[in-house]
Length: 249
Image 1 (tube, rainbow, N blue to C red):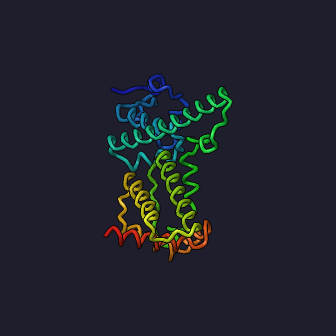
Image 2 (image 1 turned 120 degrees about the vertical axis):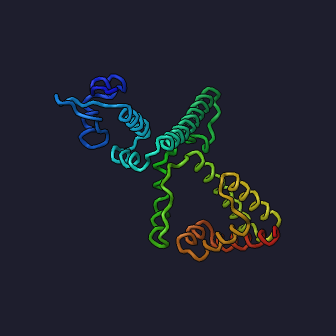
Image 3 (image 1 turned 90 degrees about the vertical axis):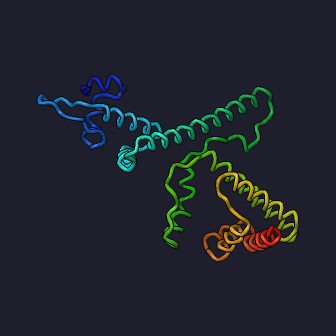
């Protein structure tokens, strides 16, 4: 069964002008054009239009949508990817709603809202990609390694960033407090950190962590980042990792 552009417009709530534009730029081609010049669309074209509208929900440009559709011929896989994106957006909106409710409750009670709760949920995928851009560019230039360009789980990134920041803060405090790198309290900090990372799909062994911290020592970008937080932190972290791996062996 074929549908005219007017019928597709009524079904999808996409304007005829927009459908004409999609045709013009090659994003959505009609199944055929009648002798009278009418654009006609079949089931496959309706499915592609649906996919376009899903991606438009995430503010992808039309050029990006075209690339995504052309590189994902498997409709089931594409729908799964779009479901993941929608789930990430839903979780982020729930977090924003929670922040809004906490703010309202704070106003009603007269109790100030904790600063760390004021902006929960406002981080976006674009902000994360911008934050990771310097590291991504460095890894590509120095090692020829490209970071993944799959959609980011913003809530997951926020949780991991918060845990990493807390871990590095504890390690810095331990260094400044004169706690030896092989102290059992340091081992417990590392154990908790690796348990968190592994629970979030990273699968890092104690030996892997030693190798990771050793890499930080010999790589200028990461060494500068750690030493910028606290002089000696990169060396302390590597020594602590080695001590913990030996204890766990």
